[in-house]
Structure formats: structure tokens, C-alpha cells
Length: 512
RNA sequence: GGCGGAGUAGCUCAGCGGUAGAGCAGGGGAAUCAUAAUCCCUUGGUCGGGGGUUCGAAUCCCUCCUCCGCUACCA
Image: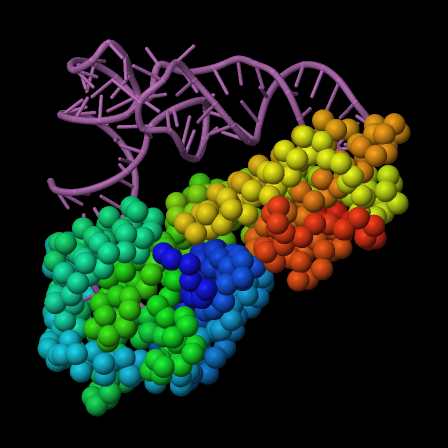
């Protein structure tokens, strides 16, 4: 992927019938970190999230709540807006599939597919369970019943189909041409083998419910929810106006962040729809893993769903953000546990990072009259630490380019560790009594290292990182990544600093 | 059944042809600037079993065992 100025990252749109849980928060957070990183790195960023509001389940839930579907979704979609805020994420747009701009885009895309000859009217037939509200394949039936044990009946209804079968070769060519289009690699393998196994045409309309976007020219049909939902990525760029600056700048999307359960929709159906409509398929779909809770699979019936609002209230926003992105290699499944969360918050953040900042700033306060000291001549040990700090951005940038935020954090905390060792080895509290010149060089070096660390942690822990940079009196414009490295800015001797204040409180065991 | 992935220290994992590594947990010590935080040292593994290739295998090949994912239309 050549250097491209624009960066378009999307979260899936969340189905309003769910309550926001850790999975939603996690995906949105991952997008946010990518978005924030790219912005600080000088790229033009568009970060989109939103809600998916059509479908039979919503229609039914609205009815049960005694509300019109639109009024119902207006209400429940707010829960996701709140989650987006509570997680400290920074979307540029929040789209809802019930908005006019989206309906217009879906109808336009549908027409393109029709024009391309990829839509035809047929009959959708299958075993349907009224109780489960689901169709089952012949092979899924157990003793003539649904896998759930529910009775099934043979149902046939008219349906429009998308000629997915015709796209097999072109999809495979796309995967071939863009080896990074589906990540992690294990998911790519699954998708490739799925497509190689042959594709059937896809039913893309329903007549069994009304709450959706009508098929243009045949209002008895409602457009299949996935075709509807996926189109949000285009609607938010003003599709069908493909000439606008917004559209030409950001399409195709650089990164569709998704959970592993919906890779197929994003990596098979979506690129096929797009190519059929004459649009470029996404550059990359990244599938992250699932969380377990204290080793247990999370499920509503077990009642161990993790509520992101509660999580943030209990452990703190930056702590939760750090934990979720650091604890687990991004792309794999991970386990959330109270003990691990506290360990990360207390050891990594309070002890290693927070305490480093605190001890250095306190020494500056006392030994240098609360001003950035004049480094004078640097010793080899100083240069060594600075070199590590200066090299950080390149390492972190490479990690983020492969959507590996855990690697980025690991590299950053490597430098935190080095800095603590450096402070111990240099023992500035001894220098304070014997060697003021050397003291200044050491403290300046430590401050400069902290500046690099805090700037690179900005995307991950925006609040705490900003506070640290405040304490180093780093101006807003100097917080961009262009001010890092050997050719970047430097802390200016003499700059007065505010009184240091802890940014990562130690969490008591009882907090859990 | 088919395809793919994984089995390495108590835990999570890296290493992927050249005398076994990291983080955390456990043990001992140093220091006292700091949110009693930090730093140093250290216990610990016949790298799932068996066979083979090689001067040499955790690393390649075969086989067996165990676990996981995918194998289409639920939002």
C-alpha cells in the first residue's frame, strides 16, 4: 500500500436490538485508536460508526414496546451514541440506516446492481422455523426439526437474488491481488477456501416483514438487511454522488474493522456488491476476536455480559482502553478478568508509566526550580535512551500499519522500562547533591523521553497522555507526530512547568 | 467428513535448522527521587507422543493424540 494521505476507517453499524456490550466497545475502540493515530500522523482521517436499524427483529421489538419502529429506533440508537462517547472515541460521522441519505444510497446501489444484470427475481425456498424466526438448510435439520428442536415448515416466497455465483473468480482475483485485504491471515484462508468451494446466489429481498428499505419498483419486497447495512459505508460518503470530494477522497475504505462473526459479509458479499456496482472493493477488512469473561464464554443466558459503561466507571477510561488493546494480540480471542485488568492498570500504568512521570517531574520541580532544565552536553547513556525514544514512532507506525495495536503498546512500554532503568542508574537524587550540571542533562533526557512516550500513547490513552503533555508544557500543535524524533521539536530549557499531579491512580483491589 | 490453525516454563505467548526465550506469577537482594512505586539477581521446560531426514530439529518430513476455527443466506 503506497503512501496515501486519506484514511477511511469504519466500525460495523450496530444492530439496535442489542444492548451495547464489550464487543461493540472493543471494535469501536480499535477504530478510534487507528483514527487518532493516523490523525496525529498527519493523515486526513474519516472515522465512521453508526447503527443498523432495520429488520424483522427490530420491527417485532418495537411492536412489543408498543412503539412505531422509527420512534423505537430513535430511542435505542441513543444507547450506542452514548457508548461511543463513554469509550472516548472520536468518530467523524455517526450514520443510522433509517436516515434519508442512507435510504437514497441503498436504492441507488440496488439500481446499479440491477443495471449490471446481477439481480433477478426468483423463489426463496427453505425450511423455516416460526419459533426461531430463521431458515435452516436441509443439512442442518435434525430428525426433521430445527437444530433448536423447533418444528420447521417448508416455505417458498418470491425473492430477488444477487448473482453471487458469477463473482467467484473475480473475488478470488481480488484476494490474490490484495493479499492484505482480509486479516488476520487465518480469516483470509477461511474466506478463500469458502469462495473456492463455490458460491450460490444470494437472496437479497424479503416479503415477510415491512421494516426495511423497499425494493425500488417492487414495494412488496424489502431489501435484505445485509445489503442495506453494508451500504452505510457508502452512504456516509454521500453515495450515489461519486464525484464529490468526500467520496473521491475516502473511497475505497482503508479499513473495515469487524468482529470475526461478520467477516464473510464484508469480504465476500460486500466486495461482490461493490464490484458489480462499478466501485472499488475495500482495501482491508480486519477481523478481531472475542472476549471471554473470567475464562467463561460470554452469553446473555449466563448473565455474564460485560457492560462497557460499568467497566469504564469502575476502572477508568484510559485504563480500560489500555487493557483491551494491550492484553491480547489484536485479532485473537482474549479473556477479560478482574485480576488481569487490575494488574495492567496498577503495574503497567500506575507503577511503570505513571510513576516514571511522577518521579521525574518531582525531581525537576525540586532540582530545577520547576523549569525544563538545560541539557548542556549529553553523555552516551543519555543519547542511548534518546535514541530509543526517537525510534519509537517508526516502530509504532509499523505496528499500526498492520493493525497490531498490542505491538505498538509493547514497544512504547519497552521505552518506559528503559527510562525507569535509566533513572535508577543515573540516580538524579544523588546528582542533586553533587553534580547540578549532570543532573540537568539527566532530567532533560528523561523529560524528552517522556514527551515521546506520552505523544505516542495519545491515541490509546487520550486523557492521561494529554495530562502528561500538559505537565511538560507541550503545546497543542507540538503534540503531532511530526514533532517527534531526532529532527522533531525539543523541550525548551527554561519553560516553566506546572506542579506534577498523578495521572494513573493505583486501583485498590477492593475496587473490583 | 473436508479445508485451515494450534499444542514450548504455573499463566499468556515469542522463537520456526545450530548448545531453550519474554512478560506476568514465585524466591532473594539493592535503593529511597517517586503513586511502597523502581532496579538487580534468581527458581522453573527431555519445546503433545512416536518415527524419520540431517553433522545438528522446538524449528523440515511422516504418523498418532488433543484442542480450536471455517464448512453460506440469524441481526
